[in-house]
Amino acid sequence: MIDKAKFKNSFKYAFEGVDFAVRNNQNFKVHFFIAILVILLGIIVKITPLEWCMLIIAITLVLSLEMFNAVIEEVINLIVSDYRKEAKFVKDVGAGMVLVASIGSIIVGAIIFLPHLLR
Image 1 (cartoon, rainbow, N blue to C red):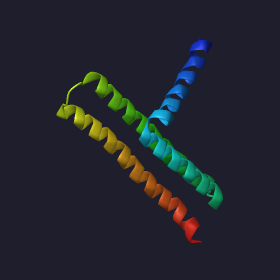
Image 2: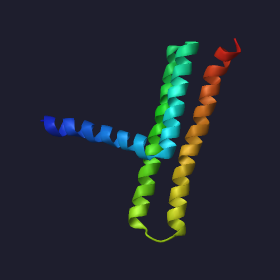
Image 3: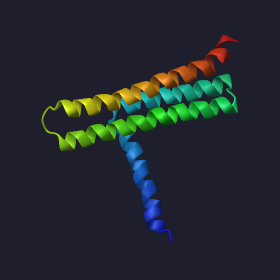
Image 4: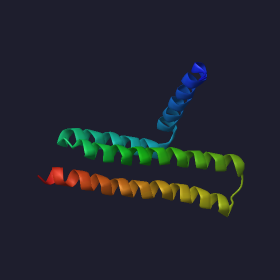
């Protein structure tokens, strides 16, 4: 059986994690702000349900990877106290992961919004 208290707490802790990211991670704040602007633009230009699905997937991917990158960086900071090239590599690859997703999301956004904006 599912322990209802543990199940409820798991959501509580997850929302606390999102709240922490919004309040403490500068890059997450930037991506979150852009996501809000993109959603507002989607409402204004009345994108289709399929376009909404693609947009939500792209936004979710970028925000999730930004949070994952923050976790990677914090774990490295806990484990490594001095400069190590391996730690730099891990942090750089994590940041690169977010960059790749962001570029992909920009392309998805352009494919979705340009036809609406050029009408």
